[in-house]
Image (cartoon, rainbow, N blue to C red; front, side, top):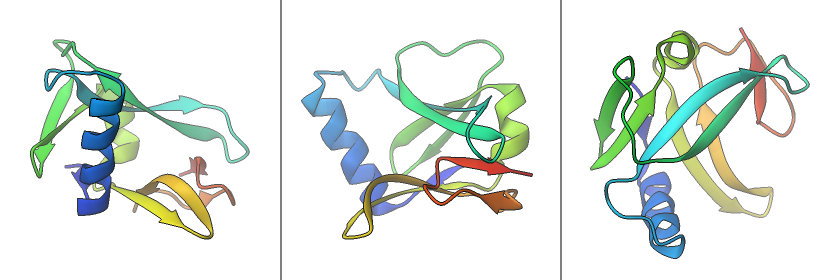
Length: 108
């Protein structure tokens, strides 16, 4: 299961409107190699659901995850921060043993 906070939901809906995306555009979360800790999160809109995708829905937001990425993302919460210490989406991942200072990469 992957969940979203209320702040993340608001920002996703706002970005969807700003970018002219329809409600058919869901959030795709994946994990790729790279970053200072070895793995990086990738987040974007996608209007296609692949046959091998896992689909989660929380607070009306559909989240698409490929099977390989799901191994790293189970139990993750997607949050959004707009505070003084930085602005952007944050991944609260219980599987990460180490994260970098920017929060964009992690290791398990």
